Amino acid sequence: MNSKTWRFLTILITLLAMPLAGITARAAAARPADSVASSDEAAIKQVVAGFSNGWNTHDAHAMCMSLADDVQWVSWRGEALHTRKEVEDQHAGLFAGLYKETRRTDTVKAIRYLGPDLVSVDNYWSMTGAKKRDGSDWPYREGYVNYLMAKRDGRWVIIVSHTADFNATSPGSASK
Image 1 (cartoon, rainbow, N blue to C red):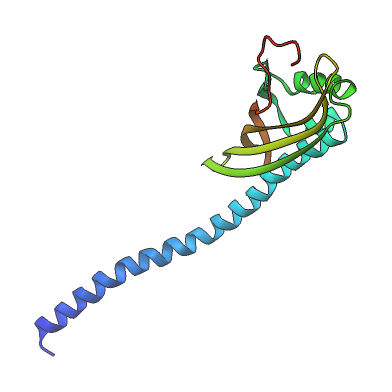
Image 2: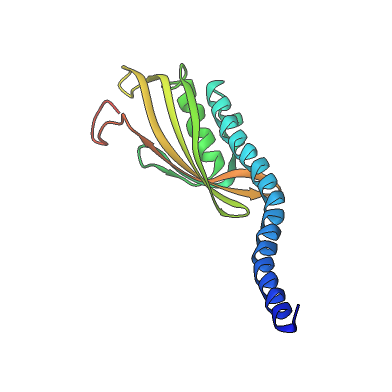
């Protein structure tokens, strides 16, 4: 082979090899991240399951273990609470009254990574066995909650919660 042909083949091989090397390096680097994301996803879903399990045992303290101490909590009625203790106290009262016969099911629909230690979680929930404030039965409810979760000290916790109730009545209604 003459030197021009050799140089052309060398350049061609180099040009083809560089993207291939980049793809291979990215794929190799993604494997550990995928493993971490998978374990984080399982931990995030466990936080939601822990919330649900606490709800279903009517244990406000257990339910709130999934919350950060400085959680920003907005209920389906638009009431804002600013600490885990406030959320726990409110739910202890609900579990002693209107929600003492409730059963809740949560289904995580999506987890969006906003950073390595910050995620947005879309969760759909349904509930049976509730009572309205007027004492009448509220046999079935369903809704959506968006959690913002942060990894703090190696543990995922809910730092913001915004809930919507698809079956809610207007804020001025006596049956809420």
